[in-house]
Amino acid sequence: MTSNFDLYDLPLFKGCERAVVEAVLQRYPGRYASYEKGDFIALQNSVCRSLYLLCEGSVYAQMTNEEGKLFLLDALDAPDVLASTFIFGTEEVLPVSIIAQTDCRLWIMDKACVLELLEKDHAVLRNFLTVLSDHSLFLSGKLNDFALQPLSSRLIGYLSKNGSLQNLQEAAFILGVARPSLSRAVAQLVEQGVVRKSGAGYVLAQYCEAK
Image (cartoon, rainbow, N blue to C red; front, side, top):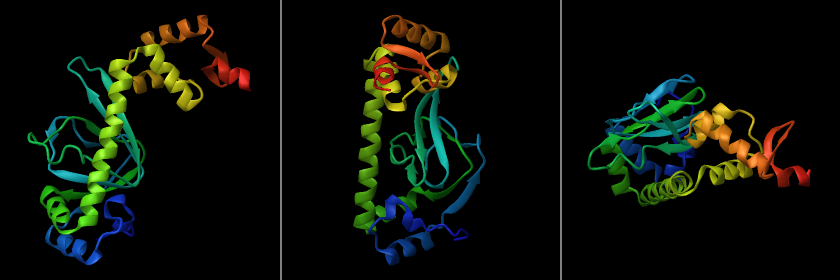
């Protein structure tokens, strides 16, 4: 391995038998890859036969429909595991694009390597299942936010989590809506007294009162 980064700092290898892991990695050598901010690490609808271990930096996953509309699915910071939900899928397709949010470095492992690690080290298997469960839970929350809640509720949730809304274009991207739609939702909530404009941007009225 050509990097000073220790793979065993990654959640996937917590509590593993290092001798077992090293033996597998010798048979299936992976590779380090560096990306600059804005680089595409993987493209939507590309073949998914590798697991991406985010060692340094941050990335985001986005989907694009046929009309070119972008939807931000997730943002991830190192250390984390990318493509865990898709690598063993029947169709072997990555349904999202993975893009470097900052300069970042990844360790990329082939599917055969991942499979043997899961078979030979119970700790790696447990960690991988935990990663799968956590990512699935997150995706369920996203489904609830974007498919089952109106925009006004999603906007209130965004403000509750982030404290303020300063950039409408950026927030529209995160919420997966057009900027004009978000502007109308903000205006309606302001009119209803739920949201107020402050020096920090748009905030929940109750937050203003607390201040």
